[in-house]
Length: 312
Image (tube, rainbow, N blue to C red):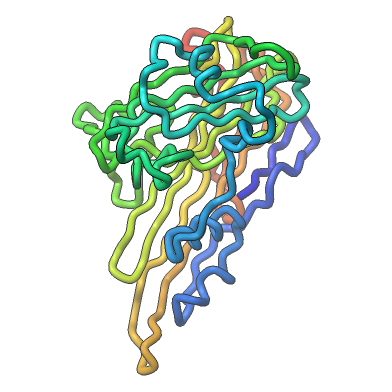
């Protein structure tokens, strides 16, 4: 899934957006060809067929060189947790940022003896009850040890083994960088899906990057998925989440059976775009949030809050 981000008066194509769509197909194998989003197609294939998704967080970085090990990175970004069990430690170059890398690491609560291949390189509640999620920015020129560019973002996960979060107080969406609502309106810790390196220039001096994460729900004969994104940027020496918003919704609801054993499926897709406006609030560009392809002109404008260091 890709976004169109408008910066000033210039539109930058960051990803292919789809129009909101609703359609009936007459068998399960017709769903994937009707989907517009490439990420949506990949996630649907994973749900239906168990397909493996591409490596999106750089967990293969360690196989491309021999100087660094995942344990070295943990000792840099979170030495106080070096004895935790890590199901994902990924390191990926930040495009356009010389010698700068993004690290995403997830620790797990499961016993080490069952941290098998299904949990490795994962930050997903489907197979891996998580403990902590760490996002860090490192400077590394290929020699010696990387150095922190800013204080890392560290979040302790508060959920049950299925990823559900107690939201009795109604504030869990705001308290976490990675919580979202699934199709059934339950608050869950999202499955981390990919880094988004679109050109999110929030002001002339500050570039942000995104992390996309999702929640899936299975039904009898159908499924649904939601995706959100959180933007991160370095502010006052710390890596901080600065905006969180829904980006994609997909639903496949099974309908009537046919005599040949196939079944109707109602499928819907919605995707949203971020447009960076020329107007600034407190030195940061306003961000317009709209649904792609709808006749409705309704939109939301996010503006920078200096006190909270966050878009609201």
